[in-house]
Image 1 (cartoon, rainbow, N blue to C red):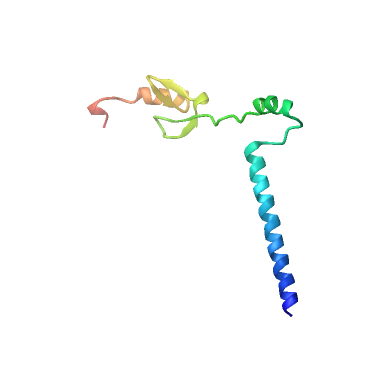
Image 2: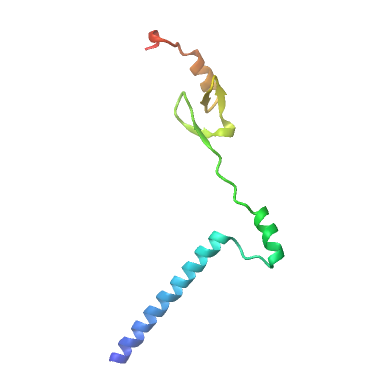
Length: 99
């Protein structure tokens, strides 16, 4: 009975170790990227596959929606998500009487 228990325990520990090693390998490959075919190709391949950063987002002064900076419209130093919102904001009365 003790031998069966020991075999079951060894099987469980072995499976756990194999999964831990696979997880560590997949994390390491995700950090370093795919393996290169040689040392000369490594530098050129890494330079061409450089990850692109996410595009900055702006907050619309009219509605508060966040939009990509490339799609935004900037009027009088204030960012807007569309030209329509820029016109609507410009048409709004300003000053103390605007309340």
